[in-house]
Image 1 (cartoon, rainbow, N blue to C red):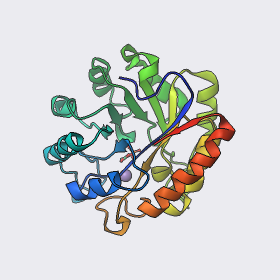
Image 2: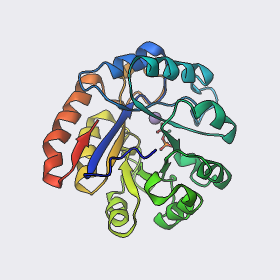
Image 3: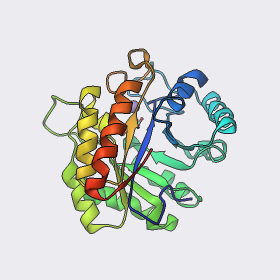
Image 4: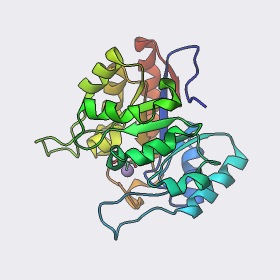
Length: 253
Ligand code: PEP
Ligand code: MN
């Protein structure tokens, strides 16, 4: 059930749109020259405004089911309510718990009973200790199946969407057994910083990134500013491919 291969240290790139919008949108990402095999994509979105796109729900699940018939890939999506478990289980390889739900201990308890890894985002203003506290609710999964994801925190600084706390990544990697991801997209909030932030994540010791990619970012129904287009995505993978050997990691896309 683990996304990582045990033999060698890997750097995983989980990529895809903020939200799944259509079969053709996701297929365009899958068909990009990078040929990704670890895909993210929101099906149930927790939007700040109720009038914003809330995700395709069951239609999104069907899109993944159909695409999985045509080619192999691992899929990770955010679960926002335990009532989604039964329908998501057959199509997902890892559950994502979003920043808004890091403190939703009942949801974490439900996920700890299942046989899938969980990627636990850091809450907007969560301390490292609060974040680690939340991992206790998942401990039945085994530490190798709990992935932390630093996605930027709220600080006094407002120039960027969030403040990317790479110090937290360094701290966690030195002191705890969990795999740690970085989400450069939500941390920076602007695609022009995403490649650099991803390289910085690799240098900080992260085990991978969760990055937003969209075939036409300016038409994205959520987070259009921060999504990489397919050309930038290719550039990202090319640069990570060159940098990974320096950090003795094997790149897996
Ligand atoms: C996401 O990854 O699409 C997302 C909503 O992230 P976060 O929970 O970190 O805001
Ligand atoms: Mn998003």
